Length: 236
Image 1 (tube, one colour):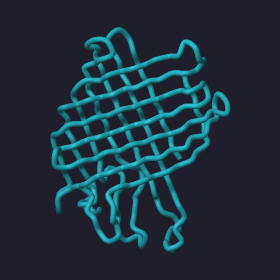
Image 2 (cartoon, helix red, strand yellow; image 1 turned 135 degrees about the vertical axis):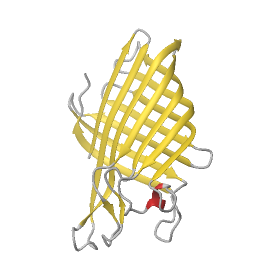
Image 3 (tube, one colour; image 1 turned 120 degrees about the vertical axis):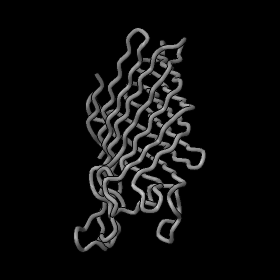
Image 4 (cartoon, helix red, strand yellow; image 1 turned 45 degrees about the horizontal axis):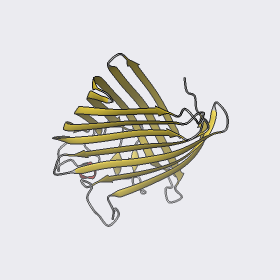
């Protein structure tokens, strides 16, 4: 399941975008005799971007995002906890410039292209874990440490391209580096609306974090998550 609430405000020189997202994926796990299921995806994400207009299409920007999850994620044998609520809790903040493009077609009804490109040459990355019994190195913590912080740079891009009033392409790119570590996400969705309220979505998410150690069980730092959903969609 995926819940996404997006609220934007624009008046005079102020552009303010807020997003609240919760993703949850469960799959059957026959090797787990205790529960019989495994949490494959769990994300709680809150983001706020405040822009003050500098000149045409460009804004001075402050971008803040907090991420964690709701449930425990465990290994197949259910003895090792990989992550849990606020374990870890990640907070990123970036100061820079934002470029906003919003074009509505004058010849094709419902066609619209929107792009928010946020470039933050100065960014702060903070991680904290409420629990110390999880695998800390999996999330980029040093051994026996539950706090991580670094200064670097960040880039975010959010695009929504309405080909028609019923068919759209949504894309999100996130890149964060401390110049010693790189974390990036690239998400794409095709959305088709059956009606005003019911839509289907094909979603593909790529995630890469070079702080994750390579092990015999985890042979790649690249994660791929695919999802097909049918749900409720409302634009106000």
